[in-house]
Amino acid sequence: MSASADSPAKAAKPGREGMQYLDSVSYRMVTLWLPLGIFLLVLLFPFYWMGLTTFKPNGELLNYQDYDPLWVAHPTLDNIHKLLFETQYPQWLLTTMTVAVAATALSLFCSVLAAYAIARLRFRGADTVGLLIFLAYLVPPSILFIPLATMIFQFGLYDSMWALILTYPTFLIPFCTWLLIGYFKTLPFELEECALIDGASRFQILWKIILPLSLPGLISAGIFAFTLSWNEFIYALAFISSSENKTVAVGVLTELVEGDVYHWGSLMAGALFGSLPVAILYSFFVDSYVASLTGAVKE
Image (tube, rainbow, N blue to C red):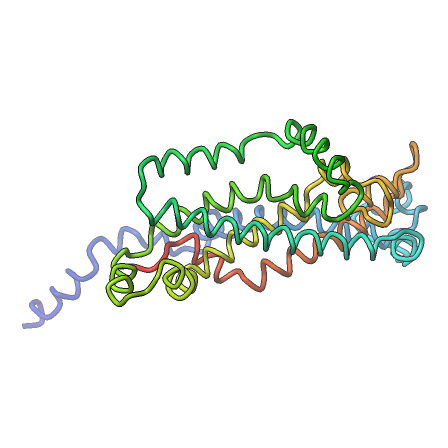
């Protein structure tokens, strides 16, 4: 009786005794904690270095013989003071935020309409149109900014935020459209068919059914668009000349590098503060971002 009672327990764990090494501390250290530690070190070390350089005085920053390069002996706020009060960094930050939000909103609006038409209206050549839109994203900005500069001058938009708000969608819309096409295709067609039977229009279906279900995909596309707009450099350098209208990426580089003199402390402070809004954005919407990568509504 006891043998028969023990047999199911043994059958429930086949080969368990031979795989106990998987639970050992040394195995988990090698397969989990060590790679994770290396990944975190590579990922977080640039932020640590920027923070160190931000609070280091110039004497420590340039003297590695007497001071530890990985620590701050005498912290100072001079670099932050120079960045905030001797440059127009707050205005650069406001300009960058305004341009990024406006360009992202405009791009998402156009991308939603284009992606819905390609993914759900079932017209001939839809797949080809989607491929061509994605190929437009692959065109280097260094090629496009020359003809775009001519248009910006002709419309009188040079050295204004509108020059960036209207040119950033040239690379944001193709990417967001391609991303949303794939997400819209995962939504069940039965939802739209039921709505059409009940007399709903295409606009009502898009507004009341597709968009609420596609919220993770929209957030994911918005995060990518916002990040690309925030970090864009070529268009901001070519279309903006006055100091007060510059973005963070251009202003920090052009105003804090004087010939062969690099104000490293203020440069790192500007880079650190400029990276915080994107990091905060990702932290707020990380759940929706992960959901958009794992799939949409299941049938």
